[in-house]
Image 1: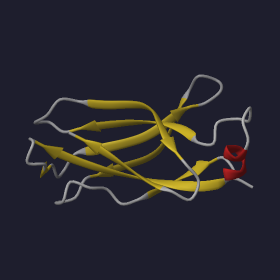
Image 2: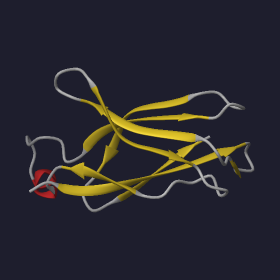
Image 3: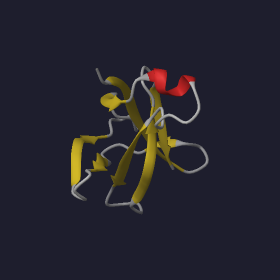
Length: 105
């Protein structure tokens, strides 16, 4: 039975880490047939963050011995806001039972 982990995105600007609200966040991955599957489209809130989004992750037992499949799932992330450069991330790792926080400067 597949397990889940979660992903939270935190968008900010400058070294002072001022939050960027209103950024569009798209979580997806590539399917085996080469097509992209979109899991979530969210908008960052006034603190620059998204709500946690549950994503499928492999069984944590895979991390217990070498030579097994990867103990995490790979996802892609796109963050866009009209006043900032587009940010893209590939191969974001989501582990079972873990909340991953992806900072987007």
